[in-house]
Image (tube, rainbow, N blue to C red):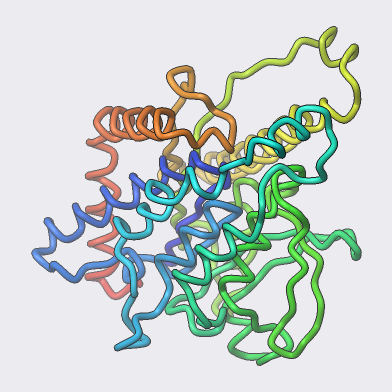
Length: 340
């Protein structure tokens, strides 16, 4: 059995899957009696987009003392958003005014995010992450998806290897929010990249295809996917308002619909694949069904809204506590059986 952990994009709403990760890891420690139980030990492949990609990199970042051991716990990974979310999505007074009139290219200063990523990851490379993973981005010049693959970086060396801080900057370069991430491989090859949410806000389908490339003949019954989302948006847009709004101001709404559509499409196909094969329990998705209690914009990172997001995630975890227990028990059984 091959297990996959997939985490969606969603900006500051990454707090939601981040809190699920904390709950999973705490229950794993509790049930196994092992205070050093980490999520990295319980999955074969990790996949992340945007905020989900950053969470994956935090979970898989190697310790400075032992390269086979994770540097950050799930709780420490969550802290990046809780402690630094408002800082990442802070907009200056002048820029706030100019952005309302469409006079700035991007809303936020990418250097703030870059500084935080440098502080967390330093010079850690993609090839040094402790488990196989894929992280999504989009190459604007080649007009195609770009997948950062830990395994490929290890095999092919500097031409396909990158600093993790650059990978995270690229996968989270949401159009209109941050500038294009112009990054370089360790071999000096240039990549102009945008947020992977353009095509795979929910990267579970990409992960499913990736793991099918394994040398052994894997069939769906040998694959178990846990997909963590950032919330199922019910926000609607008035066609008359959009029609009468200047094109420049419609862009955020269009981006929201594109990314939401990409998420729903991946989820629909994954659910259909496993339902058709009679394996509905092999694809499990956890996310809030209702975001009405929060400001669901990806950059709504005020301290007040962060508290609301935390409260929403807490409610979801309480409501789905029995399912989370089942998931944890399954992960422990799979690891004990040598499947992981």
